[in-house]
Figure 1 (cartoon, rainbow, N blue to C red):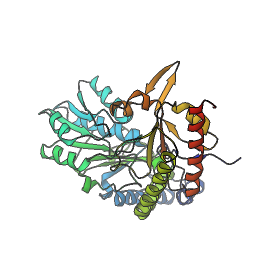
Figure 2 (figure 1 turned 90 degrees about the vertical axis):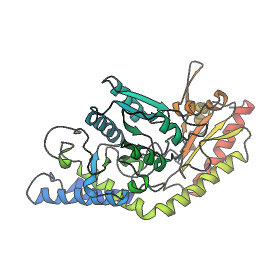
Figure 3 (figure 1 turned 60 degrees about the vertical axis):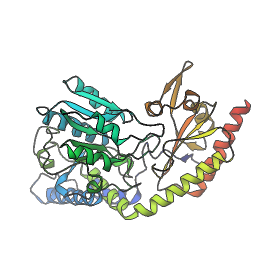
Figure 4 (figure 1 turned 180 degrees about the horizontal axis):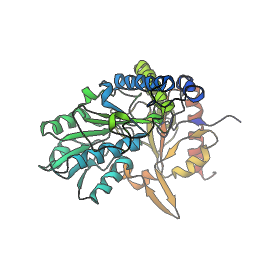
Length: 382
């Protein structure tokens, strides 16, 4: 039996074979500790710094502004906690949105237990935050703004550069969670105007367990982890050399193929959308129709239960749902709730996210499976 078509790239990507090929040396033979002074350590250390240069070139920053972490969640934690604690004498107010990933929202909630205050700005029905709403939320004691670059569920891309200008004009630090955007849209820290930016390797065809945090030169967040002096003294612990090498290679590949990959994914995403909507009634797009990741398609099927749809298409398509149903109640995605999506549409929300390995044949197979499942459920035959 053929494997289901994988359309859940926003959850995680497969590792690119070219990334695996470059990592293999540091899994099989080059096992040295980068902190060691002998040849084994030197080889590992040079590999780490080569990867750092690759990530910095991808982000448009200096190598010394890139710090390796265990992933996007750690990067978000260290950015937000680190800057909040470092700047607490200036103020204790943080501005974010209701739309963020839990790796941001839960960090802000945790800091509230340390005496910080968070303002969570609303988004519109398409998942876009208005920079004017951010401006209105700023106060004399605001020290940090954190707004995601692109949403993981509906793909809406936020006006980060506009928000950066607002924050910068008041000397407020801006962090963005960019876990979903690298390899899909340009991620240049200078163009965006951000002070800190988080990326996650496993959203970028690198392994799980590796990520990076860009920290603008001159900023001094609280240390990530205390111990020895790795990562320029900010994050102690022996480096994950193979993972770092993989992330560096993944960034190099993404940089070289960004324009081509973006156009290709957008065409396939639209083919999927048109194929389903053209043959199924009661289908609605969730998210911004224009300012959206080129690989992300979040659709609601009116009157249907997304989890039942996933069950029906499970042998053919791997996707994800926007609501979880338990004992007759619906646990709504906080993203769709923030967009004020009506309940009758939330229940039937599915996210399809495409990637580098997705083919036109995959899309056509997915269309057939989704159309048939929706028709069967509506007729009561499923």
